[in-house]
Length: 129
Image: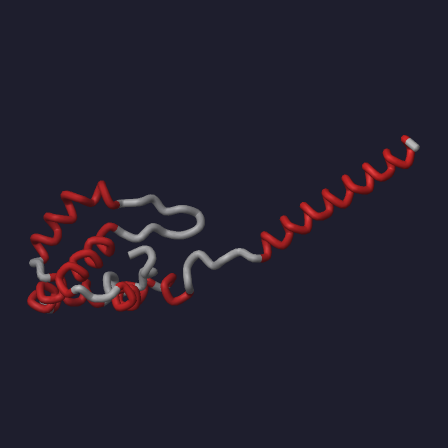
């Protein structure tokens, strides 16, 4: 009788181990993408890295109109807050630069653009904004 119970306990234990192993395998398969492909190209095509750099150099009035701030004032404001809003890069993804964060904030305050619009322009997820 004890022998049968011992064998039954071993079978139950093996089944439990197999179930846990299967759950762990399934969980690994369901990984989510951290950054969507088009957002990951922010450094190449985002407004901060393309449009605003060009406007800053070639069209200061357009830059001022876009952010409602002169380039000198933008640099001054960024210098005051850069330490507070800068994050570290991780092995999973690069942090959003402080410049981009400030540009998004100023654009939102200046125009009231929707997060979806800002997401497309700056290539930053709307939940991140």
